[in-house]
Length: 206
Image (cartoon, rainbow, N blue to C red; front, side, top):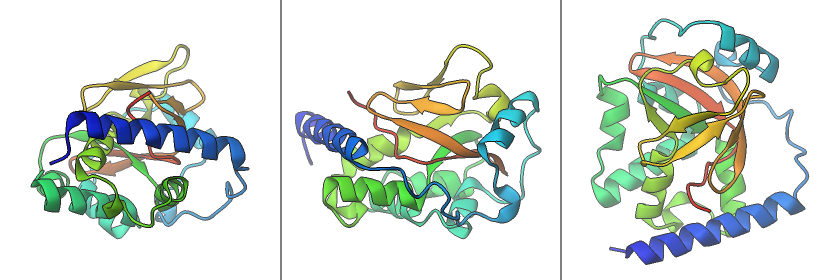
């Protein structure tokens, strides 16, 4: 098992590489089609409008089932990898669990950008402990719709299952500890929570 110092070092390297990559890249894929079902998609304008609405009714499928069926392939692979290596029980939690969670789910493109920045080709090339911590940084307890996530004025703190927070801004952008992201779709309702789609993998260390 990797030591805590080793994991922190790897996370620090990840932040440095991602920051450098962001500075060099031009965000030219903003119009690329998502793999989500058309009914679940929302553009930024619709996301901001949804702040004024209450939480949608629980859906028929769980968070895990939606992730599997709606094209979050890299996120699912990360969950399976952590479960296989660490017996973390994350797949069962999101597929069969009854407790309510809100997941900020990175797209496959977000993961691919991360892999490119790190010079790897799959999630399994990263330490499982690091991947687990990153995954937990994308989840908060409770069923939180856009109106309780995206603030109207000051940034809103979101406490995560990792035990550290990130902040959501009025324009639906996210300020994480190590990087930034945007909420690109919101209020995808599951039986055990809500999914908000983000366009970057959130990094939980400076």
